Length: 162
Image 1 (cartoon, rainbow, N blue to C red):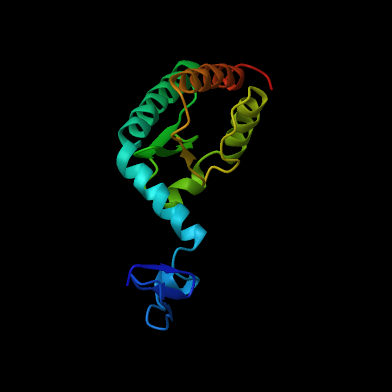
Image 2: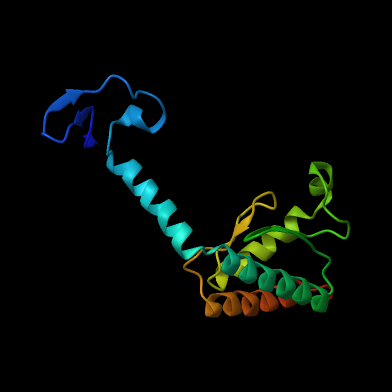
């Protein structure tokens, strides 16, 4: 066989065969399906460009900057991070399980969410969801996010009326 397209295989002489053999997984959609080809191209790009170390670096900078901004504003937060994904909780206690998330301050998270959206930063609207650093994000995006977060934390700091 030379190649496959749709539900057919072609030999080196150009003869077409109806393919009933490869009916599992991605081949259910047929050989050379555009969506499968796009997924493979995406995986090839990820392997060639490997954005994960950069995503991790950016997320680490966000983690450090968010924790520092909250501390300076006198607002207790916890941040759990894995690679380029993290979740911010308004809580004095470490977050280790679902029960811990329940005591985190949902109202304060909502106010923080609104403050950041007003400043052009879109984060998850729920304390239960994760932020995801993306490959297109730039150093300037990270710095802008941290500046907006500093302003948001300052606006929410104890002693300031809302």
